[in-house]
Amino acid sequence: SYESNSNKVNVETIYDVASITKAIPTAMALLKLIEEGKVTLETKLAEIVPLFGDSEDKKQLNLKHLLTYTLDLEIPKGREMTLMNATALLEVVMNSRLRSLPGTRHVYTNVSAALMGYVVEKVSGNRLDRYSEEIFFEPLGMKKSTFHPLSFFDKTEVAPTEIMDWRKGLVQGEV
Image 1 (tube, helix red, strand yellow):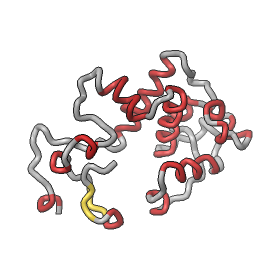
Image 2 (cartoon, rainbow, N blue to C red):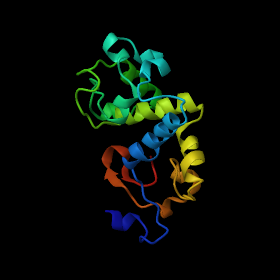
Image 3 (tube, rainbow, N blue to C red):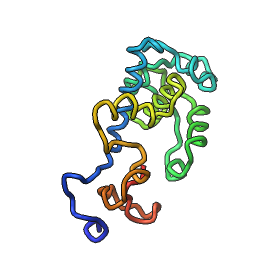
Image 4 (tube, rainbow, N blue to C red):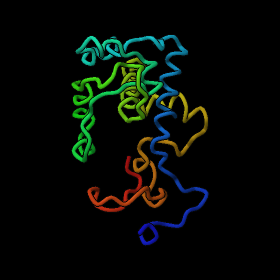
């Protein structure tokens, strides 16, 4: 149980915000690049990531589709996907076919967020975590916001997220 594996919560406890990172900072970082005129809502993903435009339908996907979660790819489901590294996951996404045309179906998925992050990295020339620190976390004084909590804080400062057998028990401070 959590109780036997973690410290008591206090005002300094660090929490994993998980899917909130899809909106803050990932979508916000992309919107910042749009505001700066580096890309537009109509910029095609294939212009930034040519490997993605392997079909006429996929060439129509633009950044607005990512921000509105109206990208519907045939992505395999299951534990094997969760065990893949970023390069392998990106390859799966790049090689996936569309289930429906961009903009026609809302699908809340990690894929749209991951592609937004990838676009931010390509356009800004900086990793998403570092770009987020420079643009949001540091200016806002968010001293405990990071993509890598165990690089900066002791595990005992981080609240447990969940217990997962395939990750060998308690998940705490692991992104």
